[in-house]
Length: 234
Image (cartoon, rainbow, N blue to C red; front, side, top):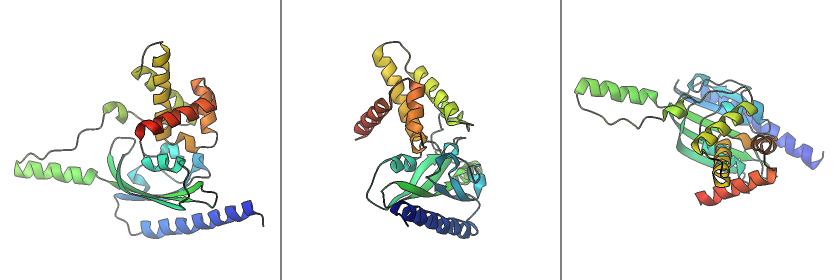
């Protein structure tokens, strides 16, 4: 068996074991908790197993594009690491409809350091907010609610293709940075690249090339923009 075939066999066996774990754990989880396994080798149809799918409205075979907004797990998955496992515990995400979720993710990397699987847990917080509202009504004591999610963000919907999503992202970024000066155009393109990264587009095979075509730049420019964003975060 070649080294590449051995690696694929290892990854496939791991995915099968993780899928069985999702089914077992999912059978006893409360209804507000979703557990989902992504096969990152096939990001356009990444969901290999899912339990309590109603929490985010996804199903087996869905893409990472149908995932959560600004999920830092997928951003982390883009970064190379020598660690075989990366744990991201208890962080906040939002569903496409804007509902707050508590999430935890484990990212698994192969022997080549590339991510091949992600095991994610998402807990719907709506029940907690409803309970707070009920307590406020019954007690007459005002309880401070979390800040509302921006309505523009709430308008985000599922997309049929990566091209549709990129076109919407570019349109939004251009609207936030109007103007024809070179600096305005660059700001819009960098913002678009940032939003594409947050949606996991660059996890997908050919994502960088498709983004470059959509923005009218080279793939090397996309990598330069990603470096600028990483340096800004640092």
